[in-house]
Length: 180
Image (tube, rainbow, N blue to C red):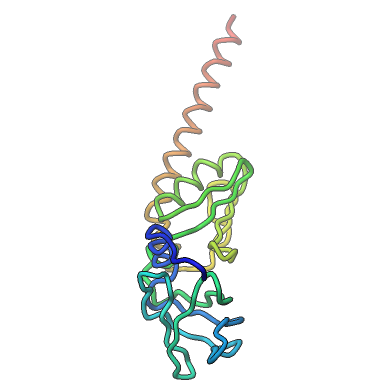
């Protein structure tokens, strides 16, 4: 890395890789003592330079540089929901959007699910959920599902009520037209 990341970028890294995040090394650019490919480790903390300080399953500890070393997240189960999915990507027929919390995911589903199915993935590209309209079709994390449903179900009821009231308004208009 030729330059330290900005404070904003460091904050983003800290949110993406909170303490407890499990990673697996693909390639480490340490010329002297790299961690071997396939080795798994747990993030202990992220320093102010954006380096992930990890304890690896083989007993070694070493910093992982996010823009120099190649690795992927394998588990966030020991991390709070808010931290586990601090950055998600919502994909819909009319565009994509970064999502930062359960509230934003529920709003995205209810807004865009009215026009087609929605897909929510992690920033690493792993699918978290997909929908059938505004309803969850598949979801990979049951703990996240519980948190999401607390926010999503009332929004779904609101969307359903709005749709039914629109249908009733159309019926009244048709009734009026038929009497003329």
